[in-house]
Image (cartoon, rainbow, N blue to C red):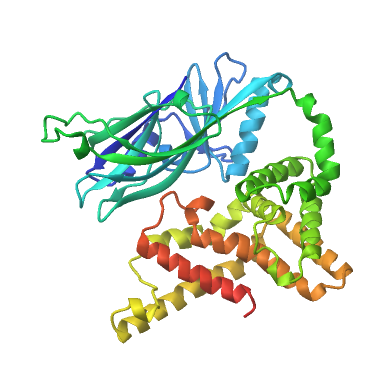
Length: 453
């Protein structure tokens, strides 16, 4: 039975030192593809009892796509290039450690947690939250300064959590903490509420009243799934592989938008594993086009086809997205430049002209990065788009294929990633108001260009 605890801390300095301290205290921190480390660093006895492999949240080490191999002799922290590479290694290592696991009934547990915002804390100071499970550190938010509000809006997900050592830093002040028990969360139910922090300062710093204590808005969702032996799913997988069109046709009018997203994502992952994702996407996208009175509305709704294409682009295009826009977006978020071009929101004509130049400059930077990314555009997506173009030509709609492919790439992938970078793992923290507005204006500009207008 796990409990989770959220600590709200006052940061007295840049929190990067916490990340570095954890990296220095670990036994190793290298890529599986690296050959520069001593051979002994890559030598792990997977047959030893008690060996476990777990993914690590990026905030624990300050680097993404990492996992831990815990042995009786110690722990190794290993970084990968992408989450897809990490997941493949985790799957292979788990099969080696427990070769019969897929042939046995088992449970899979996960916890999704959103740290949204906090109130009742002193202004002009910087804060972050640490997330602890059974009093062990698992993740932490970015550092935010309290101005008119203290907002994070950050999402964390933990699967079968493993313990991380919590390093104490005497320069950090614990402001308050909250406790919640997983037993209080119903399976698969999303819970959102304000929780009053407990604090050791009550009665010592004038905070006698509960109303004076900090409060944190938290969303959480616990899920436990019973998994049958792999051979129990053979007929089901065969059905999905052969009859996905009929299944999507029946479920389309019955599912809500969130349910369509969950269903489409699961189906894409299953069919990708079976080598059928390209055919699946081509079939359901072309079927949706055949039902539309106005073909220009393709990918502008929330259909199963739309959600499936989004899921597939996220699945195979993560590294492409990072390489193309990751650094650009992170630099823009840190920048003090303003791209606001609404005359009603700008004080003077001179300032408006300056900010128009900013928007033009950043939009051109993003556009050039996208145009120059063709050489490493994912082969899996090339295959899907080539199939869609071929289907359009066969139906006498060759001219429409450009709009179709542009809608896939820009409307459902690149522009949403610019608009909401934290949802695409381009950044952990939610951008501040100015940066968010800059990203919105740039995304709209890029989308206008992609619409051929």
